Image 1 (spheres, rainbow, N blue to C red):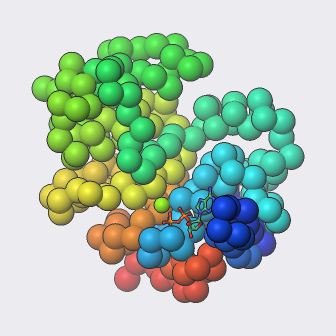
Image 2: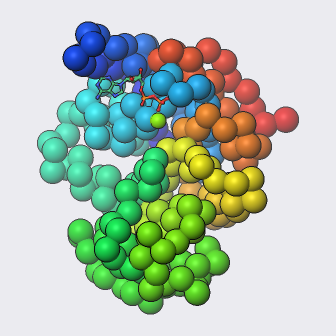
Length: 222
Ligand code: ADP
Ligand code: MG
């Protein structure tokens, strides 16, 4: 479903060149749950944003169902993303002055039929039914992560991309969030998680280890 061939990304920053991705080949099958694990700075967020159509690689190709993402027009790319992909961003990207419920409705407003009942149902499923009207500053970190996850799920995407979904969570909340991703996977969803956290691995079908922009090892769940 997802295929990367010889993907590299070089940033030209104030401190010179950074080769964030260096010749990545990766396949993710439909219905697969893959974790890409590696230390901070190894290129995980860059990889996820590249697969998500938000960062054009310096070299190589990214395809979803055989369609080359960066050959599409920006509008086509945005539509593919809106229709098929749910993102859970690092640091959540929640809007501080909107309630939990309205934060979940944000992507819906950007192109799909708004459905408050469905948004509320998704939040309830994530044990957030008592927090619908809380704004992000009034929520715990674990609760904010659930809102970010609900926002991805409400679109009924085929694919979820999640960047450090357990980052800053205590083990209990981390396991809960991974459990919700596992539910999505069990219902047929395809998931790619990038994380530095070893806990994420036991939920995945396969773990790909990333180091300094390269895939250095792969392991299937034992
Ligand atoms: P990770 O998510 O694994 O922590 P990132 O993909 O965020 O890693 O970053 C990979 C490397 O690229 C890091 O060394 C980082 O400093 C660098 N980098 C990330 N974004 C930029 C940018 N916009 N400009 C320059 N360098 C960047
Ligand atoms: Mg990152």
